[in-house]
Image: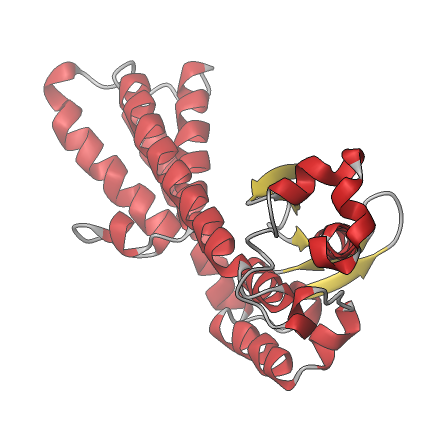
Length: 257
């Protein structure tokens, strides 16, 4: 059973919650922040009330002007609080959900979004749907959303590069120095097949998505740990482990389908 952790991450001036077990984001939490933000901006908008201009408590906020999320928006969009149902009733949203399911071979809509009750309740969304939802809240979110996704992708790509060096160091414990170049080529090829289901030059750059970079990072870290802790004691054991990992991930799906 996969242990779940809810990670709080910054996206512009807002916080987003993502759970590690499936990568889904809490849309309800972001919506609540957005509606509170709109409510606050409406109360602090300078020309709404002349009294605010002399209100010492709000003066600092007023001096900063209107938030960049509210600039370049029409008057109706400017102070628009949103309802989650309106997003799902949108035909564009319905079509996009179908597209996600088709592109990722999903059979249950709950793999795209689902509602939960309790302490960490709310509607949780597939990362692609969550990005669409955030942009639906306000067009000015677009930059922050794309930068957020880009930064996370680059972060895990860098992490993957660091863990590859750590993995090479660990492999050096079970492989003679004279065979390291050949061994690392074989390991790199196996890692590519496990994560990307193919091997070619530059494949890690072709698949620049955050989930793939994160998977590669976690796999390299796991293999290095198995060597360091003595569970893998030879190059033969290492390659057998990687072969079995590939079979579990890819070949079982073929037989099941």
